[in-house]
Image (cartoon, rainbow, N blue to C red; front, top):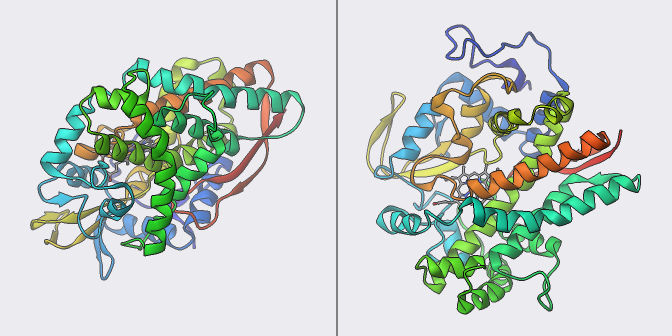
Length: 416
Ligand code: HEM
């Protein structure tokens, strides 16, 4: 079955994006690999969602919910937390409560959620983000240079996992030289063991899964509680305490960061790298760093690391002419809403109604975005700097199969 990635069936005549270059049937290498990544994760669902999205912006799918595939409508739902909630019975929020407790942002709504977000407004300043990402990036830096200098391939997916593990250690407030500190890769694996409990179409976790999740959270929470109790503002748990969080709130937030923030990043950074290398843009970016932000944004739009969001309807409404009622489950197809805007082309501005939709919108908008952007930029700049001295190329890769968040399992780089 042909997917709409390349056919672009949504944007035909009357297209809202007349200036975005239209395909002429040629599928580029970059597009082909992105499509393989999506199909590796969801071989049936991905084509179905793209196909349905290109037929109608809102479709009721009996037994599954109401699929919303157009950017303005997706944003409207996310902005309206009176009628559409995240912590309802079929959304993903409530799933987490038995594992991480009731105060993990992702499983909250209304006043309590707003109040917690307000207290966290100043959490990620440029300084606090740099204090997390710079030391965490050091091991990726040495791994890349050492590996390439030795002539061997370097697996970027592994490297980004190392970076994500280093970020987790800072979120937990564990000093590098702490006795018994878990290696970054193990920290990443623990975080990943929690987030990978979620599968599409599984509305609750089994008793065994809850026990597994709680055990991983328990290992991670030990050092975080210690750091919280020490109240050191130089540590992340100490900062949360300084912002007025109770110990339980701080543990919920740290757990949310660990489980939401790792998989998306490990999905995106290798895909960004592949997209740029496959479309022959690395060399241009080496000499044109001011273009990095718009290129990264366009790559986020084109890859959509968080492809779908869920909401429950709590009051009747109409979406794109389709009536929805309390109890309906909304499947917000960010992946179609974003990708249907066109092919990967950083020179063309992203339309206002879709801007940053891949980080959500409204009250649950990704609170980790500044951290995510710093991790992405640090890795991309490292790769561009390396390329300026010694060009590299992708030597081999494998896409991940049957995972929730599409991505590469392996992306190996070698000196060109
Ligand atoms: C490329 C990377 C990332 C993408 C694409 C992404 C995307 C998203 C999206 C779409 C949402 C909204 C979900 C919804 O409304 O249902 C979200 C929420 C969230 N993200 Fe991210 N995220 C990324 C990285 C991170 C990182 C690095 C962290 C933290 C370390 C993080 C922490 C969170 C948290 C805690 C929430 C829940 C906020 C709330 O419910 O109030 N994210 N993210």
